[in-house]
Image (cartoon, rainbow, N blue to C red):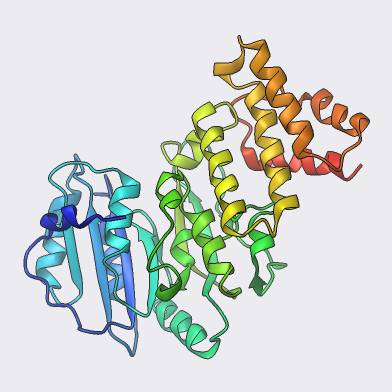
Length: 342
């Protein structure tokens, strides 16, 4: 995993602290309307330690690069900016910046999100300093829907959120959806190198958190200290139960997680894989391929190995294979879990 060929995109002559306590990995693309808010809230943090901002701007078609240039010029002792002359893609942009981080702790944020508490970083560093057994920590965040959906803002974590998260919590019903990306601070030593299969996974959060949780529990700070913007153009709206590419990638990801964890959580992961194979039966690419439907049906039955044939028929019968594209995978999994508890 070598991204040194992107080092040439470095802007200016940053003069960062030699041994930063914290690295902030920030990637941005088409965030001209948001990046100032993001950077201002980072730079206004009240801390008693040194930090660096490793920033990747991915050749945005708007004014994002100009704004990043302005801030990098104003804050050369804080910001190390890479301004791409061509688009390299979100995952590559992230990995190049992430692997540049040198701090004891690392936190990741995208340019359209922002922090709302100017003591957030200090609180999380203090938490990890005081809890050496923790591999990471996170806090609550507010989801802001900036689209035409009309949905009200909501908190990601409810009052029943556990104070400690372990690997099984990340691959159960919630599948790591309860940890806002910009809220997670991690120990860099556990993620300074990543397995090759991580690059291929469309989702970075789920495998990253599993890798961390295998080293130690992830702690929760019961405060809302960031905003997560959600809109119709975001990935969470394009990943759905009708996309074969998305489903195939999820099957690959969970299969690799199963190998990485040495099959300790095989029973949990088999249920996830079974649910995805059920989805493949009715994805658009397989609608005219009956033999593929039969194949995925039998694989799903095999993955749900604790089910009686009668219970498995409930899964197939109760409209789980005729869902439309607006049903999210999380909603689909919820329906399956309800049937499994019958």
